Image 1 (cartoon, helix red, strand yellow):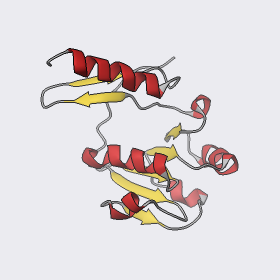
Image 2 (cartoon, one colour):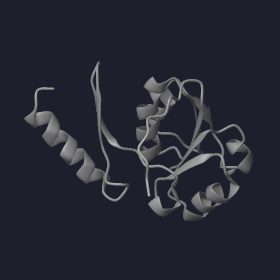
Image 3 (tube, helix red, strand yellow):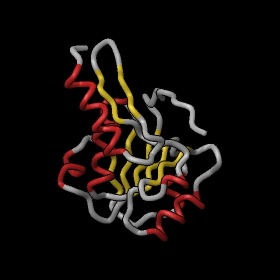
Image 4 (cartoon, helix red, strand yellow):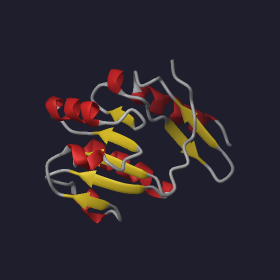
Amino acid sequence: MSYPVLLRLTDKNVTIIGGGKIATRKARGLLATGANITVIAPIFTEELQQMPIRRIQENYRAAHLNEAFLIFCCTNDPAVNTQIIQDAAPQQLINDCTDKSRSDFFNMATLQQDDHLIAISTNGNNPTRAKEILQKIQQGADI
């Protein structure tokens, strides 16, 4: 069972393992939070290379998780993702972008305005559907 929360990530360490499209999207979404973002991958997208984040250009090692509060597994290698899950400490929160059953949390589709935030979740079952619902809300209402 899930419980929706908003996390204050200012000065918290967020580690993203993977350097592709999904990792790029996660990093982009985290930029405004004030988190200390570290991305570990042998290769980074052009956009990740331009972001004001810490990049470690190497293959994943367990030591990369030492200081992480949130961990995003964004690789296309099931063995690496499994190893990340095994290496994480119990107090670290993990989002395995390839297997929701191994995730402690899911991202929501969000619409942020100055005075409010609307978030839609499908409990990690269908992120595309959550985005569609949010777009309908955005198109149908002057909020």
